[in-house]
Image (cartoon, rainbow, N blue to C red):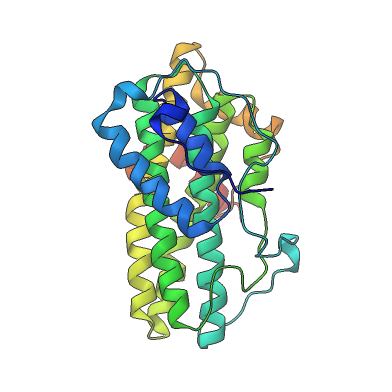
Length: 281
């Protein structure tokens, strides 16, 4: 089977959503990242070519990804000390895998869910482009440790949630950006601190870029989750709890980055609920 070729505007009927699907099918990570960034640049200048109402058929080969890394159960992945180059290489690889999956998740939101406002697609194309930038930064840093993406095993938790929410845009907005990506807001500061303590300021600076951008990504998720709740006259708090139970979202555990979560659009009621979870530990 040949890798899919990124289509031209003529191939897609000038639909950026069709191009997003083709990029999602791309198996080479560097090519996927480059095309994701280029698509956002072109779509922002020509948003009329997004075509929210286009109906696209789902191919069988989603998402496109390389043969490596080997995908394993999360429980089989062991933590390593960041005091060694080997341990930091494993960490950088894990972060690169998260960002690679995040490119796929953003592209999937663009092509999969029709009849949303134009800004929905532009927002997720922006997310895809920024996740591609993060991936490229991490892969370049990983190369300085003598490794490449695919050298270590990884797990498939992020894409698993994409599969579970494939038929419901409301659930996707609730459980990917507002749950899985928001966990990154909590995890990033302690990881950055440990990298800095190990003297790896180059890697720590990449975490600064990622956290800054991820606040914006979670904010986008909050925006569209509340937009959809408003359109269906649903209470966002009760709806989130229902969807988290229905789709078996991971349980939230502290410590939480309340400042980043507030900047990312969580309201005070949600933050009080998280504070309660933190205190109950």
